[in-house]
Length: 107
Image 1 (cartoon, rainbow, N blue to C red):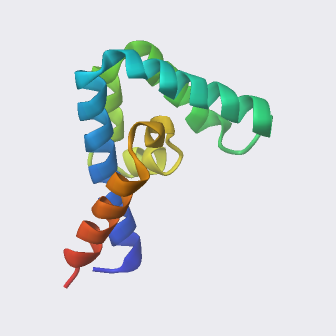
Image 2: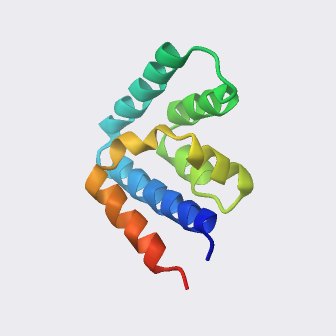
């Protein structure tokens, strides 16, 4: 497995964990929305705006839409995962464990 595939696998697992966290703690959607707003305020216009706009729409639609779009096995979902506010829901320790697991899964 190449390095990019490891990163893709890591991001998919991180998003699955973040979605589970949203199901367990629905109020955390406010953290995701706040991060999106902070990015907009800090960065202004960027080439990533289309993805950030899509994330805003997904957040407004709720956890089902987030899971359907961000955890799908598509190239578009992989792009969404690369520019994702869901990282706010996962601790640094959890990210480290998920990354190590993705690396171990490589042949």
